[in-house]
Amino acid sequence: MVKAAQVIGIIPARAHSTRFPFKILFPILGKPMIQYVWELARRSTSLTEVIIATDHIEIFNAVKSFGGRVVMTPSELASGSDRVAFVAKDHAADIIVNLQGDEPLLNPIFIDSLVKSLMIDPESEISTLAVRKTDPQELANPNCVKVVFDSKNKALYFSRSPLVSHNSGEFFKHIGIYAYRRDTLLKFCQLPIGTLEQVERLEQLRALENGMGIQVCVVDQDTLAVDVPEDIIKVEDILKKIK
Image (tube, rainbow, N blue to C red; front, side, top):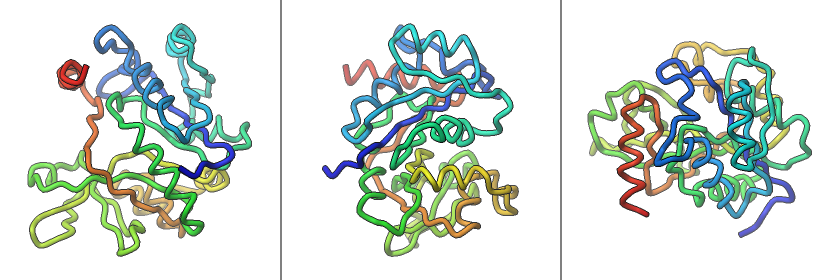
């Protein structure tokens, strides 16, 4: 695989999640969730470094205890992207991958796909993931973000409302992992929040409103983000089957 000179994966790890505070540290089969994400990221062949960006000393100490690299970030930062940009500004990387600390089942190959898509397409500034779905309940669920894209896999729109790609009811669920060119990320975090972002509560629409090209990488496997405590049981059941 073609590799960039420097590709850094950054995992924003905020303490006070609204629905599940400190979920980043919740134990999954004896290990904190953030450790699973860190270990998976380190298995990616395209990342030259993995850094965890947190706003809380307890998370900082937990990451140190399992040998991860961690940076403290200001608590007033508004989003995970801002936390990633705070760390990225001090690193001379070509590409920054914004991972999610609540995705303990993410396939490392997907990270490599994101990076590769930016390296082979100089017109794209951002890449992200999507998976083909047909479940009508997911289609109607506002917590399941949908994406539509053109014939070259360039994103056209993201929405919490149903966005059907085919008459069969097939749609593409967005998976919120991103790879950015470093300068694009720093520029993106300086842009004001736009109308579409306010309406949909989706920050990637800020990029589209400002003409930033987002390449959509379609993968063949969904992920399972941990949003509420009940999701921990689902993750543990899956991990027990694959061990």
